[in-house]
Length: 134
Image (cartoon, rainbow, N blue to C red; front, side, top):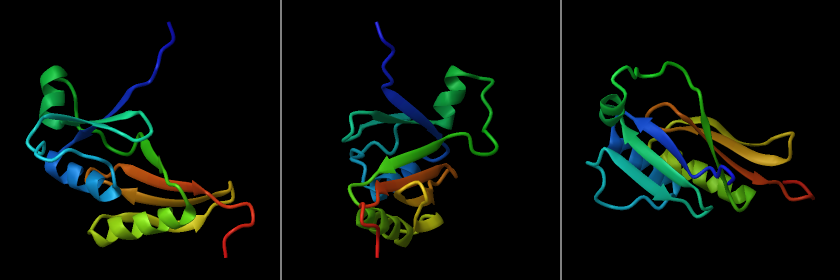
């Protein structure tokens, strides 16, 4: 039997704040779950993104400590370079931190970097059309 990745969990300090960010990003976060200790969101790509409160993490692992520094980057594929730009603008205009505005990366993608309320880097990307961007 093969190992099949299924869920990526993000430990959050404030569940409601985290879910507002990921809704602004465009993920289908269900309503009314802001007070839960664990929330799972099925993404259109088939993966599950989970959110776990720090309190719940400490309950299952009493030795857990809040990490210092970034260890994981969560990247979201967009349908087009224009969608990268529009999503970046939408999220930053909603008051969230933009770490790097959209640019055409040398590896052939339109790329941008945001930060969620816990400081995790959330990237946006889309393939650049073969003829390039104007």
